[in-house]
Structures are given as structure tokens and as C-alpha cells.
Image (tube, rainbow, N blue to C red; front, side):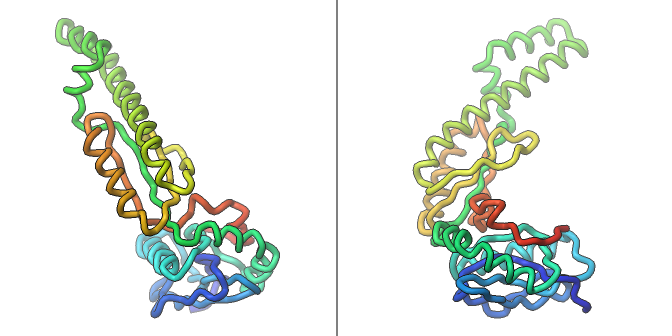
Length: 249
């Protein structure tokens, strides 16, 4: 295989050991190696010429980051970050050493957990019992069925379900935030009332997830929670810390 640049997985402390048998993106998986500059290192491999966001490569990228995080803190790169050559990566590590080291110190011993709050499914009975406007529109449809009346009812139900999910999401945020070192909002996701990431001590991850699941069970008529984690700390690494001068898929 002819290399088409250097694929960058993460920035780490220079002394971090690569997991045994670590493989990266590509088919067959590209061997992963460390390159070092001062106090920092980068986990890299040769970039395959046909790199795309295939499931196998996305999973390989994510799995390697999780294995690296078992060895120490990492500044994770998003999938598809490719530098033109090794020297480019080393120059960036040298130029940003102080900031990268400080960020690694902050992330040491922590993982990320993402929580998304969505309107509860099959919550119509509880909604009708609570919402006078929905009850009124429902009765109007029963008395005078028609497209316009059904449309107004559907819009009212969707709006009320979203409003209930957002309120439950804010209660969840207040409950979970004290157990996290930091909280970061995620991008807007269609149909999602809340998208937040929490920086959690590795030893507290199970208890944190248990609290979130307990909340979800207690508020299942208001909100559906989707939990993801442990994850590499993507949301707590600044854009500047990920500013390896690279291309992307």
C-alpha cells in the first residue's frame, strides 16, 4: 500500500505506551506507531489511499482511542485527520507543547459521557392527562374529524412532548452536573431536547451512569435518555488543541 499522508489518532504524553497489537484504519488495519517531540507524542499510522467513513474504520478509530485512554490521557482527533507527513505533526507538537500538556493534565483520569434527552415514546396517555390544550384539541377532533383539526392536534402533541422532554432534561442536568468535573453542550440534534457531555472521573463512571438510568426510569413518561460512554474526551478538547494542520475526510 502506498501511504497517502500520516493519519493522526491522538496526541498523548511522550511516555505513553501503545497498546499491544494496536491496529488502525484501513484494510488490513494499518500498524499504529508513536512519534515523539519533547513532552508529547502522537499516535499515527500510514493513511490508506481510499480512506472513507466506513463502519469498520470508524470503529477502529474509536477502539484505538479507548485503548489509548486506558494507558493515560489523550487529546483525541476526529475521524479522518490526515497530515501530509511526519514532520508536519512534529512541528505542531513542538509549537503547542505547553497548551497540550496542560490539557492532558486536566483530562488525566477522566472519561466523557454523553447524554441526549428526547421526547418520551408512548407517552400520550400521561400527556393527555396533564395538558388541557391537548385534551381540548383531542375532543375537537372526535366531535368534528378533519384534516385541519388533526393537524392542530398533532402539532400540539409534538410541541408538548418536546417541552416536557426539555424540562426533564434540565432537571437531569441539575442532578448530574455536581458529579462531573465539567459539562459541555453538544451540537443541536434534530428531535433532541438536550445534548450534553459530562467529564467524569473514571472511577465514578459506573455510578454516574446508574444515576442517569435511574432518572430515566423515574421520568420515562417525560423523557427518553440515550447514554453514550465511556468515550474519549472529544468535547473537552479545544479546537486549538486539535489544530494539527491536516486534512479531513
